[in-house]
Length: 185
Image 1 (tube, one colour):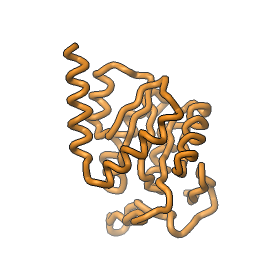
Image 2: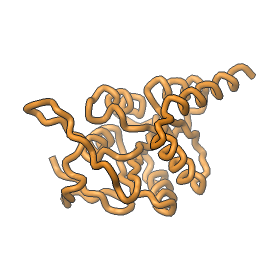
Image 3: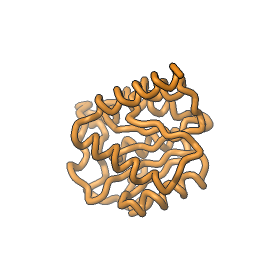
Image 4: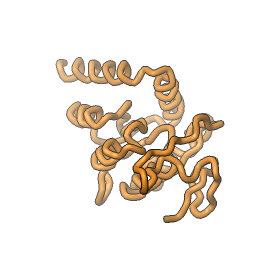
């Protein structure tokens, strides 16, 4: 397996940096999960979308807001990068070939090393049932395409700030309440 290193705005394969590689992987002998670095200078967002143009749009705007990014164009790569890099947040498309975003979220939630990685879905699937499914899979947010790329960074920074204050359950309750109100109207 090739090591990953963080590069502002992306992932460069084959250039390990000790503070990032390896992290979040279980030790095969003990099944013990190693902890990710406690503090990074800038939050790292893993952008997962099969459309390169969407990844580029997200990357540019997130970097402008002070975040570093890693990218994956499919579900299999997303799972590998998430396990190796342990990003601060995953921005995850739903509709992808082979392993879709729902499956990625489910697999991440079943892995000791990745079950606590926050996921924000970014999808064209806009029905309340899709949002509910995302939250059932543990998402902390759900953004619908088309989206405003200028606001993306501030939205994700707000999510990261709330998570940093331990407000995960409050965030999820608020979103589910909003969905309930939308479906009642």
